[in-house]
Image: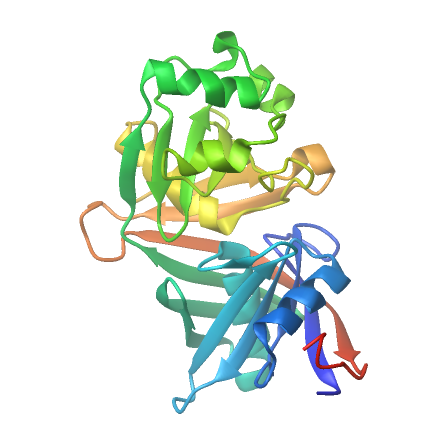
Length: 298
């Protein structure tokens, strides 16, 4: 298949060339999973999202890939897709709403134009689950793998696995711990799997700033929407924030790409869709993949 268009956007970005970059493929019909992965690897974004229309005008199937694998759910690709759909499907409207169908479920996204090539997009992440609180013994190998000592751990908060679509181990740390943290374990993915987590989110709850990486520890993410929802729900659950507030979470400082994620948790964590994550999306560029692919590539 030739002439595959894509849109380059920055998500959780106050201006272009900030926040978390993303490739959005709005016409991905006919692309195989193998080719989606290869294209993501070629563009070397942390994630790419591939959209195909359905019989309903405002509903699209969506698949998200990192350079390593497909994810059932991810935050910043969904928000970036919402802005691209707004630009393409509702160019004469200041606000638009769409639904994406991902392996993890159906997600509503609401977009509002805020300027030339700029949008604020919000998504419903749904009901958070608090899957596991780690014991003192279980904390030790996790802290070791992150090159952290007990003094770097926030003593007032637990290490806990939380999900709003993708399970994160929230590791509460001091400011020194946040700066020091790095994955130094060849077996970190299996270590997380044993406690039911997909990724780790090292989190300074007081300053509301976090960090995460791929599980090899080689690539740090600039802004992680799928972690923002769990982090916001975690703050509410443990009394570190008030329900109903808009929480501003920071990420990307250590990569010189400071990003801001907005999280709102409704007054009841038991309501059907209590977690809303929002961020600013900036249009950066347009591209076309026009190579001819062999059967092996596709």
